[in-house]
Length: 63
Image 1 (cartoon, rainbow, N blue to C red):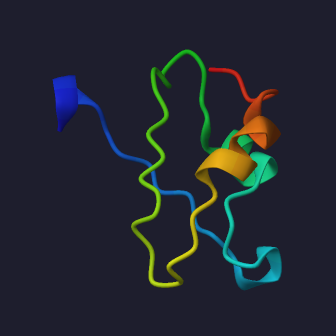
Image 2 (cartoon, helix red, strand yellow):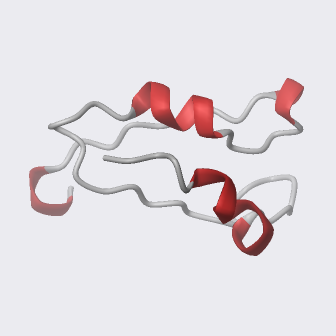
């Protein structure tokens, strides 16, 4: 693990078209323990990428 970090997975649900939602992300962020968020797109079985269109949705998510 990078610098002793512990990975926390955020599931992408079928109801959300297998896209990460800001609410799902915020449920997993635990200040002050959370230091970084790594979005490993498009490493998924659907082949969809949410990087350029989807990132503005996460502006309100703070560590």
